[in-house]
Image (cartoon, rainbow, N blue to C red):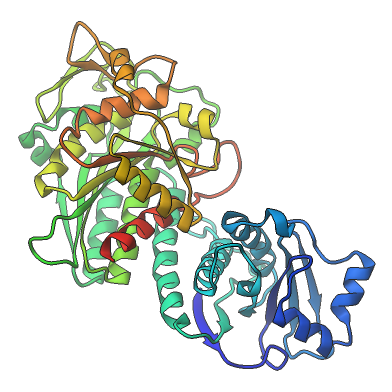
Length: 490
């Protein structure tokens, strides 16, 4: 979807669809002008009770006398006293599906006129653009749309305003990163293998000047002592890869910000095999890798004046005769030993070596992103990513970026009290801590491989996709991470 600005009058603009929001009691110049030009159409709809008052509900009208637009889409924004930034984005995403299904190739958006407490025009325009683009997404890699299917909306214009071109350029870059993330996560696991992720990264490096790519194969990882990562993938016919995307937008000596993504391209659970129900959704277990690659896509397009390293540990966890077993003791790259009690706790195994390897870059801060624990979905549902860190300043930076991007996170404790749950007499640690505080003990495990670092862990098991629902990957937390890096570049 392309974004543009237009200084044409809302009544005279020739477009396939005019998109407005309805918030009872608010003053919106666009709706006022439409009402006057159509002889009180909005008033009549209100009196008849036909205006969509519930958040995300829509009303589509065609061929209205008095305006040049072929269609008028009214999106309900809910109640004014309940509307906040997150509600604004959610309503537009839901309502934007009507635009996606309308056959409108061009649209003009007046949604930034909606009053949102504490939010300026630039923020509302940016988020409206991203929300409409999100609603416009359609998976097509292995299922082509029918000839009768509505085409995607190709362009959305916004009323001209000072500085808006820059805002929409930012929206274009972030939307591309989110789409990259969704495209990768939605692919079936027979296509999106570790090698495929590596090839995707390499192609990105060829596309974007300033983005360098390094790929480590299994022999190179073995030479470095990455036994924890390699143990997870040794039962698969698909070889493991470690992928590094390096953006050098800052000064040569500036410390980089490092993102480390979990890329389990399919997770059967290994020898500790998962139940069959919903196992197909384990193609999404590389959501952290997809988010890391998507964020680097956005960073390269934005040409941020900072240094960023994106590291992806890409493996497939299968129950072959060569697979690692419960009871095995594995020595990680940093020399620490891990007793494996559950081969389905594999994400922390591969991140252990990836976090160790990433410390060579002397990070200004390091964030790992992983669909790590079902316990995080139990705790937070699908609304927030779980955030764990022992650095209060870094926590505040990431939480603020989540609020600003409408891609929220919630902080969970990472107290030393939890560390005793992963103690074992047979190794330096075990890879599970039992049922209590399962998400937190996973974070405690990772903390042992990020000692001395400004480090945070994002558990996106609930936010990267929705369990048990036939819907695509969400693209999260590309918005949060990109907003955080924009803030660091400022």
